[in-house]
Length: 114
Length: 111
Image 1 (cartoon, rainbow over the protein chains, first blue to last red):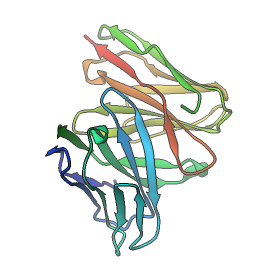
Image 2: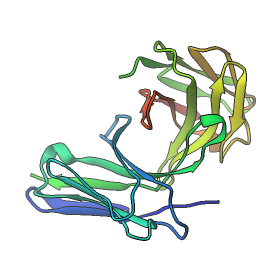
Image 3: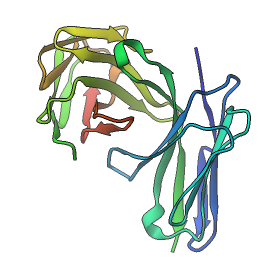
């Protein structure tokens, strides 16, 4: 089945450093979503990318969708302790009866040294 | 958060016993999902529902069944729990757009 590979699995940074996580697929993606999960919490939707080469920003977060729609990245500039958590990408596997079926990457766990 | 509750929040059970997890939503959304989360695997879809009494399998449905007799409730049943089903289970709903909203999760331990 479809899979998105997400790297790295873990990342530890000093507060103020930048952070990037990558998602890669062997097949063309229709779209990709990003979620954040705080420790002990539940996943929270961040954004969806749909168009080839799309770039979206949310304050210090920059999301990119590759030109070939086979990869995506999330970049955080100048990390803060509030950025701690696990970041997941998710691709839409199918749309049966309008039900959006998501396949998640393994996640990148970000820890920050204050 | 999108009016989703899950019960119980924590459960410890023994191998071979049946277990039912409940997801309840208050906002009348059509689509509901059950995921499990395990280290190194992210979230994996177990079953989903696209309406009352309309359900379908996800990628890891073996050993699980679901029911949805009312819009607001989506039940996940482990007929005979096994240690491999120890996990954190999340329910999610999908609103009018593309966003899935997740419940707080149920931590299940099967001894």
